[in-house]
Image 1 (tube, rainbow, N blue to C red):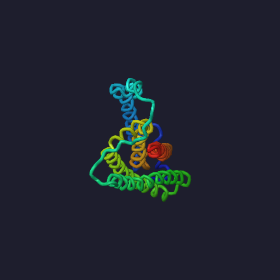
Image 2 (image 1 turned 90 degrees about the horizontal axis):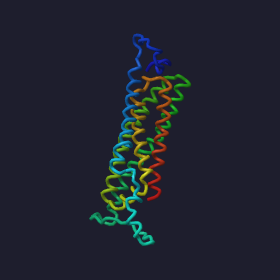
Image 3 (image 1 turned 180 degrees about the vertical axis):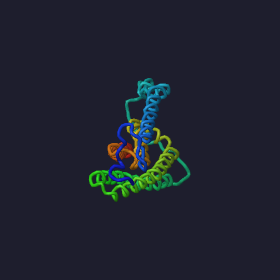
Image 4 (image 1 turned 120 degrees about the vertical axis):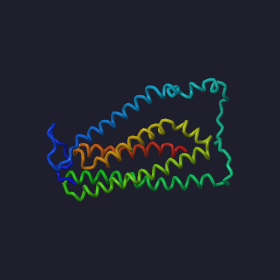
Length: 231
């Protein structure tokens, strides 16, 4: 890895010296990713969601049914019956989500460890912290990929085995799930950008990525825990 100047950008338009890495191409890639993400969000919220009626509240849609509903609340949770026995469905979901939680907890803790290593390197300029940080970054990429796979599988099991209950849960906790989905994409950007641009961008970019990464994971976890605590 380059020395103390290895994480600093080339000044102005001066071409890099022989043997030095030109970081301007990486900065253009990061800017391109940010612009593409911004365009996607603009198209999503400016065109796709309004086209699908996403800005109309469910209360307005069901106004007629609500007006004629009886003023009483039945404490019943609709559950579809499947031929898996009394605990079959729960065992499927419990196994997958328990495995996901193992990866998710390591991922959350690893993000804060990675931030600590970036700060230690920038303060001490010792190469061992940079090498260890890059290894932790790769470890977090692997953890994220595996954990996301089990998370998606758990959600599919939840929807397939408890369709009516899942519909109501997703309807009630729509906003926390929307926030969680957006932060999921933000988390992907931070973890993969931090790994692929390690020691190729300036110190300020490293700090920005290293701070945004654990913060996005924390609030994503908070959003999904809002759903879990309510269910």
